Length: 128
Image (cartoon, rainbow, N blue to C red):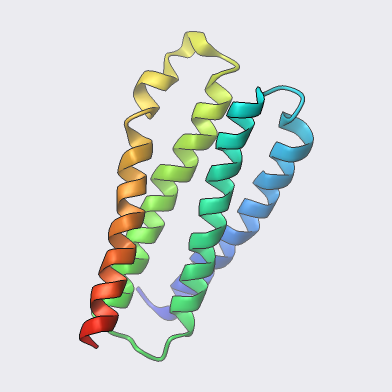
């Protein structure tokens, strides 16, 4: 993974988080319960924060392996964590689909990937 790829992922995550946040605030606020909407907002927040982290990592002059490993964990984590939250939020509108049973275990795995990314980054910076 190159710095340019980190920039692209970071911008994609940040830009789509803004779009999804607006979608949630303006279109879903009348459809979803307040608790479900709050979960949706958590997904956008984590997506945005980790997009910013990827942009930060893309600006580092250090091309150490741990930078790219953390970036990979962030990307996988956002894809699993945030997207599963979006889908879980929307699945409340169609409970008969059974999506909750399928998606519920995905969210914590994504969260774990995000945590591991931060831990890897910490250890890498300490050793550097």
